[in-house]
Length: 329
Image (cartoon, rainbow, N blue to C red; front, top):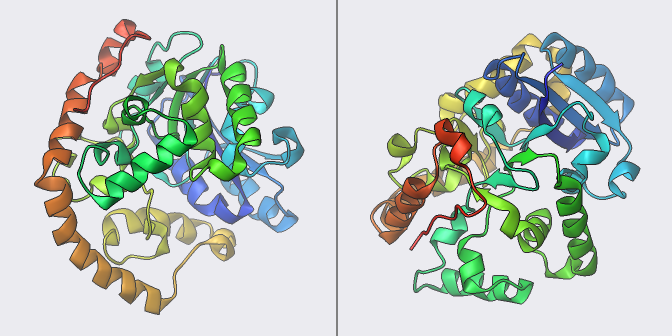
């Protein structure tokens, strides 16, 4: 049994894209280094019958749990309670959201030597907007200030969709985050993420966007420089909605393939009505121009690349230190 566990948490509604993400994680991680596990909360019997044999065939451990183990919370909060259900043999955890695709080897991320009581996470893409003089920037600053962050802390706000965790200490980090959320549910625009940032920012070590490449960077002209291994589809449309702009066949085929191999999961596929597809296709054509200007031809791109240069490569994981914090200014 491996000592590292690649963990996905979901409910039946999101089980299909999570399965595809888990298949990619299994394909790109050595079996002797990591197990791949999906924890599905409050699933109905039809979902269990459809997905259990598929996961067995794909060497993925699928476990069905009652949400009582996560205090009845939404599955998005389950990452706060990982120590309650991840096997005790797994001292290292790579948590992944279900809306990611793994396209390169995860071995360096699995092998990273994360100090006890700490975890790796990449900046959230909105941090690169904070120093713009725009209404969007002022709105983000106002929201984060209301949530309790200073501007300097906001610049280090991280995305919780990819977390490389040393499980030693995570129980306290998760408990503190859950207590924060329970006290401030109306404050949170990004519930689990705000909570982990507010209570765990001093435990976080910066992670390259290679391991959490956001869809928002699609037109930022940085993909060749970053060479992503994990793509994170944070915004609409998602590539499993259909093979139309902006994703088309590049990622769409990855979601179509399991449906061909395992027709029993077809009822759980998430598609989009044709009229909405046309709407998004037209929007994406306009956004390609506007986002290239706003992201690819502006100081935002410089901030992204400055952050990347400051991140310690995982090939030098022994040098990871709680003092490592890159600047994005």
